[in-house]
Image (cartoon, rainbow, N blue to C red):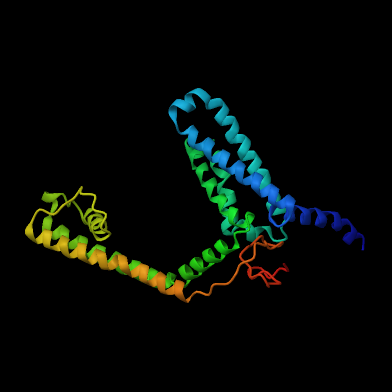
Length: 275
């Protein structure tokens, strides 16, 4: 009984923090998330301005101060997010959890690796929360359909990519034999690079076949490239058409912080916690 009484204030604090940080249905939660979104925008703008030499030379000290201010602020917020959950590790390894971590580590890395602070632009990924904050549940539903389709087609796409890689190795080896080092194809890896560039219709132009046989082989690879580009598009399109379009709730799980639950869901589909 005593232990339960001791834990009640802590549980109450976690519940309040969860409602404030994760739930946007309440006025306080909505206000917190809107303020957070604006801070993210300002912090990303600061990182962008810091990369401009003329601005950095004039306002370098101010930009550095703002960078560390936002980093410390996001670090505290990240810690509170983990504290407010019953299963913080699940959130830490989730998509949003990793994004939140990437929002703070670049500044600390810059102490060891100069220039690392420019990866702070990853913070803009945190703006994905705007769909939940503004209650744009229909966008969450559409995003869920796309993710479902991509997950369902991952094996087919993996086999497809492996096939493309094998074709690139074969075609690269052939062009290496046909053209040779005299025409710029100095090695099989270089030739494979050319095959990939040609097959994907990018065509940088740094390497080009000079012989008639090489040009014929290049033409075959180019035509093959158009067919290859259509395959993954068709695979994902079919999966999207088969994906069920269910409405998604904006509620976050109190245990792991996961989102994307059905409106009538009573338990989290990821950790089983009660919603």
